[in-house]
Amino acid sequence: MMTVSFACNDPENGLSLDKVFSIEIGDNEFEAPNGGIMGAGCLLRTGLKKVDGSTSRCDQAFKLSRRVFPCSGWKGWYGNWCWDATRMEEKDVLDLIRYVRRIGWKMTAGAVELGGLYDSGADISADVLREAVSWP
Image 1: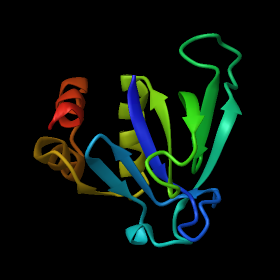
Image 2: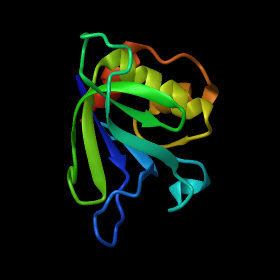
Image 3: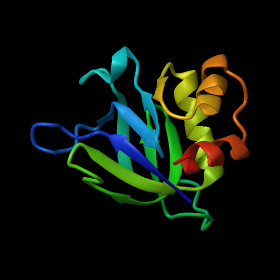
């Protein structure tokens, strides 16, 4: 399981804006189009029950834009009041990264190898993700 953080709360009061402007996975940061400017983020719905009825990896999910991703729990104000976080299986984190790339998000910080693959549109392997997340 990997921790995935979401900048989704109002910086003035910490209340959820129902949009995500930035995602962090380890030290790797991805920003919504338009530089993640408030109001330009992608719709985020949290705490959804798993819709396929399975009892596999988790009992929760979140929806980002038009996609639903399985997760394990949700913690508000993770790190500070602008961020929330969840835990995800590695394969689901890879799906999330591929999805945000497809909808125009930019990788703005992180491991060079992951960034190069992300920017080129090449496939990102689980090994590359693990290395990028464990990088000191």
